[in-house]
Length: 126
Length: 277
Image (tube, rainbow over all chains, first blue to last red; front, top):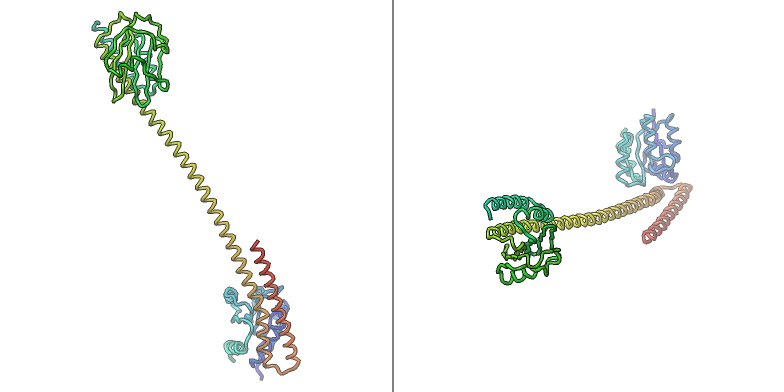
């Protein structure tokens, strides 16, 4: 029986970023299913019935920012792992991200093929 | 002169001496002498004059007493006493004594006067008595003794007065210094608070500038990161539709980057102009 592919949520208010991230992951040759959300609130609703293995999350977004999104995940006791993908190079943001148990990595945009392959080896070694 | 009278006189002298010693002001000393001199010897007029740094005289008639300091002047016979230092014993003439309201008949009284040095100062003692009251040598001793005691006390009071005045001057000076210190302290603390205020203003401005710089960097990095990502992705695209989409995205992101740069330049220019005003 074919092993089930991991499910990824791409959460970024910029559809261009979601497009880039999706293409980079495809180019990296990582087999997975992807769902892209420009509105973080939609992602929060969706994960109540379809829990992703990973979430690529931006920080600066209108309506619900990355930190509020992470707090919602905590409240929902969601077990998805989160990789922050942000344009912020601030050490303060990096430190704050690390304070959330769900966050497994912090990547400064743009996401690269090499980083995706590295992540895949570290977290999906099957 | 009888022995009893002499004893009585010495007792009176002892009493006056003690009162003189206890006097705390020239006024009190004058009152003591005015009241008690008559118990020591008979006199129509008695005067002690001394030329301290601030010369002074104490003069007594039966009814009045006179303390002269600012108005002090040597009397005519005192000037000749200072010049010759030879004691005077002569018929009294009231000329020159008008200020003391003396009314003795000219030839009925005798004027006695002696000169002494008191701590290198000239001291003149003058006594006017009725002619019939003959002066004994023992009485001149008593007068000299009393005069020296009085002058010593006057000298002491003058020094105490001087010390008191100096102390008051020092106290005034000290008050002035304290007041000026307070003024200086007020100026210093005012300047300190101005400096602190300016420092705080500068700190706030620096903080604002740093925040603006940080926000600018972040806002620029966002479209730039997108462009970098798109370029990376474009290399591997074979699908024409996706390539066209990527070019469209690149164009939109580059325009956004340009717009953000222009905003920053406009805001920085405005901020710079405001800070110059």
